[in-house]
Length: 282
Image (cartoon, rainbow, N blue to C red):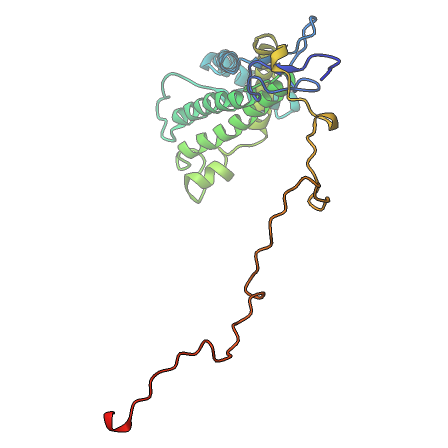
């Protein structure tokens, strides 16, 4: 069978077995180099997670250490304007190495719970978003969303550790206070997640764009591997069932069935005659 161009098959990568014919454009996330042969590329998800974690670690270590948080708190004071509240959002990630004296509400443990939750959930969600042929857009928005969600859930974890009796009394126990009380997620937590997630997402998206690896190419099939010819000219024709029987066909005699067999007539010739026995001998 003649082809305008030789058939191609995918020699590696995800989603196609070796030797399976492929047609049309490459899948999303696959690039075509100048040579014209499609090349499959996949994102290095592990590297993207590592960069996202390191960037997040540097930012939280920089803006959440005690010396920086004291300066930010002294600068904004009791002001509740938009700029002051945005700056106060950076205090969401504050941390310290040891607990403060008289920490009966377990605030230090709550801070570590928030920061640890942010690190762990961000790494897991970024890894899920960067798997496969993920490009800049998918990795960027996936990472941004991951940091926001991790920050909000980290605030819940922080509230579940803080004892409301030593912080701000709130009825219903720690879980109720963690979800609806003063330590629960609020607008400050959301703004903090949006700001931190934007920076981390930019770093993760650029890493996904620049650190992609080739996992396979589409190459022509060899001549002996041509697909089986198809079409009307290659279709074997079989005679119809209702077609007339050719003259050279041997016809066997018809075997009679039970309906054709007639029972024998009773004309007396087929009846056995027994000898007559006298009555006295009976």
